[in-house]
Image 1 (tube, rainbow, N blue to C red):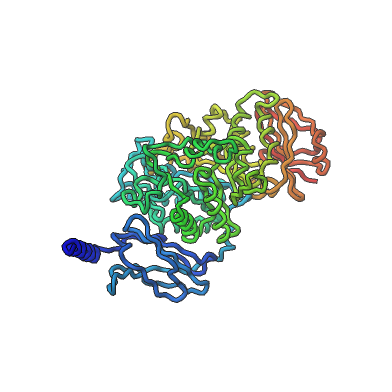
Image 2: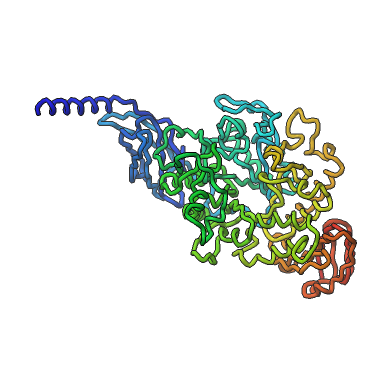
Length: 618
């Protein structure tokens, strides 16, 4: 018995000596800094370093209290819950980790001073024209960062799915082009680090949520871009992803806990059926594949029901807003994470920034399904998303179908009417973000059979209907491409964005005659829209299409816009007396698209496959 006790005591002594002698270090703290004076006094730090959990954290700074230390499965993580008093001053303080009486690791943490009041973050709104661009494919302003040390994928412009070298400097160089076009807000596909072996140009397999990919630039470059954009009256919308991260994230071989990701016995892909989340009849099997299945083998599915992961994501979004002075967020794959987490995130965000905007990607085909995710009181299950804006995917499909189909009872231009007649399902249809194409589908000009007349009709719809319009980069110069050929072909380089490009479509001289017609048409519409409150805020009144002609009005106070879309193959003489309930208040009209004037509102002649837009006056 004495021998057993001796052996046991010796083992404890060895373990104690081993534990004391183990190396303890800090290599990362997230968020890397924070701000004094936030509305939410809670801050949770993730501290990562070798055996950091074996030491005790101590903070001695007036106004900052270490409320709780959380240990997890991995010994290399500690989560620290801090409470920051409202009167805590900006400054630096040490987070010390002690073992016994010895300080074994120290991290100097900074509380910065806020530069803006939270109420002054006003986000984007219906006065905006949003431009979506993919940074790797837009413009290469700094060729020196095309390949960077430590980055696994090198630039290869000959590979449609490789990195091409576009960057933050390229975007900054083209701000004047965008402003001249009529853009007021820029949605940029993710700029954060995607250090993956291949196919990482798109930005949706992030490997560091606090660092800009060095092939795009630096965090400071991003901050300078936002500042330069603001100087020119342009807003910046950041693309964020809460559903997944790249499998090469720094914790890939050492997760804080096994439930950090959704784990499966073997790789299990999402079914991509977003409707399963709000489907009252959905099976548990389908629901689980939707929210827990991986988006791709390179994109690990995050478990937002782990409260530490949830905090990590929420704080990261607030960090970027505060650091960059962001004007809005576009949230990727919105129905894929747990919906209760997404609602908590939005509620937390709006508590900090009450006038802010987030647009969610809800890729569903029916208005009822999309409306579920826009904040409303009508969901039968009582779900409140708190989401301020959603993309109008149903309208995207309707725009193309209405122009490509023969006109019938519910086909052709009638399909657009039918869709808009379902606006009652939305709490506020003006909160929808409208688009005709984006980075994940066929380019508009290809969908329309490269028909310029149809293109003009589509652009007229986009910039005169209710909601906030979004234009995909290159649509203004009729770029083409089909998704089934590969995503690289719908995300081609903007001609002229690279030094060795022989064609510069950023200039009128570098565009074909047809491209200049399209460009000038879009530019004219967008710049006009910036000045017209009726199309920004006005009530939509539309009339059932007859003979392929669809007419709708936008009214705001004393302003009224009449839009006529002749989707037929014949010229028409349109009797305006049918619309007297609105036109009776006005006596004449001025065309927005050409030099046409209406001396009376009795008849108007409109050519086949042509849009007309009139500002009405008394």
